[in-house]
Length: 235
Image 1: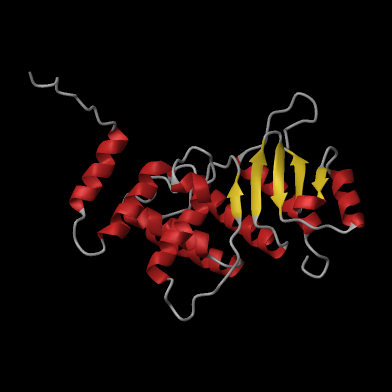
Image 2 (image 1 turned 90 degrees about the vertical axis):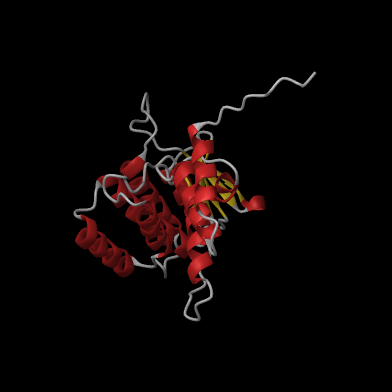
């Protein structure tokens, strides 16, 4: 007797992935599949922990830059900059109703993620406005994330992430005076010199009974926090 036939029910996500692979069998198809995979896996939540696989491993913003570098990484004028991994609850994305085509959306992600400095970010904002209209709030948060990343890079940080009820900052080496100031401004902060890290209590809307900050409020708080950590000559 033949074994019973096993019925496989594909989820919508699995179907999308297979359809993408089937549709792109020409030269360079790997890039198309990778870009579609980015879109399927959670481009709507740039910094959240909802992604799986390699995106969860490196962070979505870093993965976007990796995809971008796959195209432009061999340019002679490419600038080497240390990566900064940011994993916080910020709803920063390019809405489908703002840029309908998936490749153009991922192009926007890549440009913002690769931008260096306010001038480049402003040029990208002007380009998006010219092509697609006024920049919506979720995209503005992408620009805010990029600014925070640049500030973190200037402060020598490589990681800003949520760790339970704390925001983890690393690597971080503070002189005693700066450490005392950080603890004074953010009571409950835990400094871990042995592993070059600090745990700062996650910000809330109120000290008692408040809810955790998200989105623009969280990014604004983070900018103020990083300003405390930056060296005086870089501030």
